[in-house]
Image (cartoon, rainbow, N blue to C red):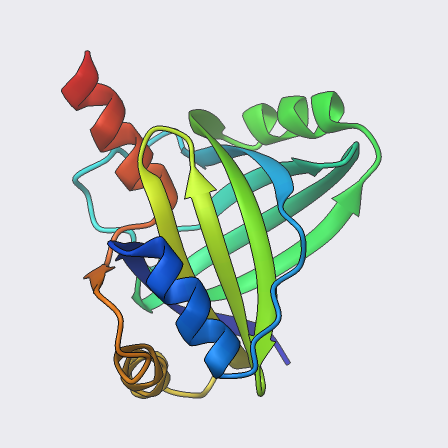
Length: 183
């Protein structure tokens, strides 16, 4: 059965308050890890077009290891069918993506701390160019409602009692927007 990754994302307004609230909830975050992502989109797709039903690629490098991921948004950009695998050669994977009709879009560099709250994964990210974010993720079967699970995740985040601003864009869209505003 295909896996579906469902997430909610928040711009963090008060990072110290968030870290304290997570500790109060029993969430222990790992030490920060640098992640460098290259995002890919089909050559026929461009920003501003809907993402639902469109496969997007990501080639992530963490501590010398390369992870290739394909995400296909379902209910919205934050509820995706997902498949991923480790690849031995990032350059060859990049070339393969180009041959399959994808093009590189943006690079996303972030420092990520992860933890768990029950069955949910949490990521506290410091994203180059756009600042601190909180992601809360659930992995489910493909037939579960992404919108219903997002409502549960959002309720949990709101109960933390810290100032967060929910965003509905993915990091690639947020980074691209920041780059265009600074240019």
